Image 1 (tube, rainbow, N blue to C red):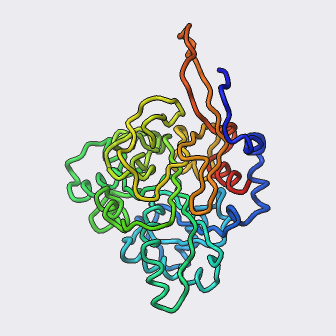
Image 2: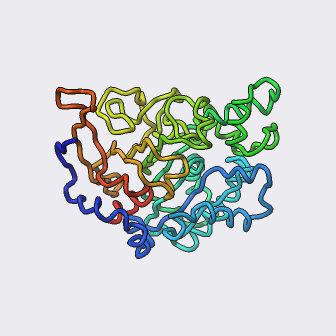
Image 3: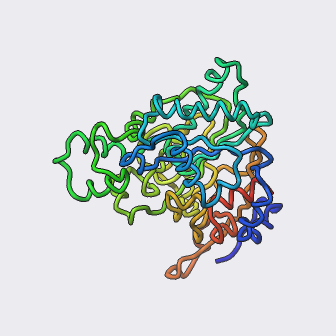
Length: 362
């Protein structure tokens, strides 16, 4: 392997400090100088044991982010997974949005950090929060951008299967049933699936689609979850829960293999089955072929991140990840320059959350 060139040279120090990102991060409560609001993902425990009250929802929300982001945020929007987006989830979320507005936490702009289904919840809140707050004479939240890990805003085929199984419980084979149970934590029944209804690909892709000026920065994983049993039932590449077409922000639910038509998730420069188009203001920033669905939140190292949208400024937020390209020749190939790859140097020594946090605060 030989290094060919390095871009974003000013960030080269990042490669040597990423492993200390957790300690360094504790000195900052903000991301790029702005307060952070967290929006968690689907919590299967809520389907089996619905939370009794808002305090129970908040306790579960805090626990969700313990690995990395909890200590780096000023507020959270916690919600119950046994509810529906336009019902109980919206009601509970508004109670917390109102508190955030009253406290003035976003008067100098906030950055939202979402995970999984939190992407869909965030999209719904962005579309409605100004109207909700203004109806009570409160200032709308000023949101600079949303950092979306493994975003499920485009739904997942696992939700489609869960709903089908709920209404046709005897038709499906053991493998599919096991995949659905791994995803939901229960034997599906029509009245027990909560937000899984909204995660069906058609349902998710018809919820809160009005364009807005808030950039959605996408951080995409391609590893395994649940021992790999869910992968055969998800279209295209996936992270074991969310398909790449959703995580990238693609306008179509067709299976794809990468957020780019010319770059694989492993970083190889080669023609790919990429998205035909992306939702307005959605930007796939990093891909990581080895990271799992939950591992993007700070629990996994050893996986290389690949920059897609980079060296740009979105709504005043600088996107400038260190990047290098190099040639690598397979051991069996005795001639030629080999294949070209692109990566964030040093990214395998850290996790995606530390990488993002350290880069934006650099």
